[in-house]
Length: 53
Image (cartoon, rainbow, N blue to C red; front, side, top):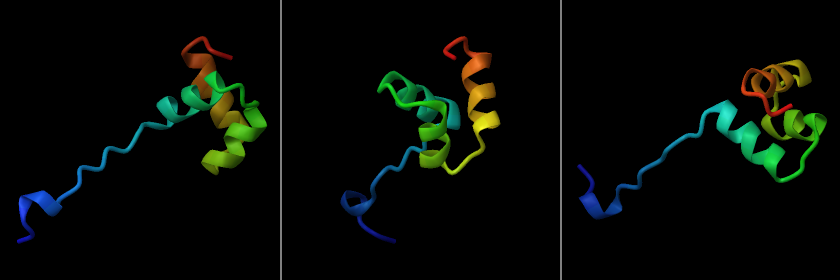
């Protein structure tokens, strides 16, 4: 077992959080979709569900 000091926590952000951060940076739906390797429709839906589109 590795020593505690060598273990790094890895927290993966949800797709919603990732999309929100990119949108707040001023990225377009197309840019967000490309960066996240997801469809434009999926990104639009994520943002629409949370009123940020």
